[in-house]
Image (cartoon, rainbow, N blue to C red; front, side):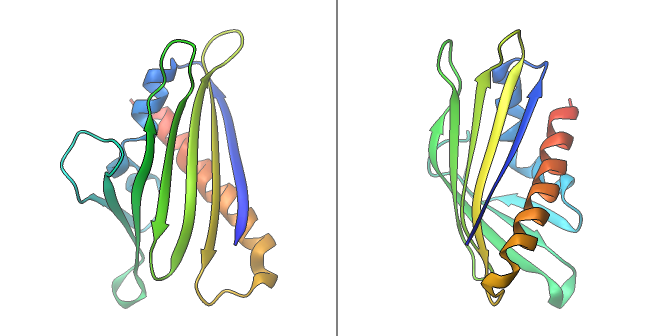
Amino acid sequence: MTLFRVGRTVPLAPDEVWRRLTDWPAHGRQVPLTRTSVLTPGPNGAGTRFTARTGIGRLAFDDPMEVVRWEPPEAGRPGVCTLEKSGRVVRGWATVEVTDSPGGGSRVEWTEELSVRGLPRVFDPLLRRAGRVLFGRAVDGLLRQG
């Protein structure tokens, strides 16, 4: 398993950042060759399940996830969302934390630990770097969208 973090400070209010980062179908629009399907009825919360399908044809795989912690931001309290990944190819967890930023706006910390089936540990540094780039771009895109 490899652990990586993505952090961003943005001029948006924490509740707006939370709304954008927990719009699960929008995640699929930020990652190339990926489509995200929510499997449970709304609203989002603990127990929400969704799957990101990445790839083309036979080269595609599913990344099923479930929200196991759901605490939207409130005055004086950060928002925290934790996902568990339970796929055949990708396993692990992710935690998204949204806090007030000193001077206004919000601070986002996306922490993820994942493993890819069949990928030897010698590739962990490459997986860590790729995770930071891929999820960094996804977070940036989600925070840019309206």
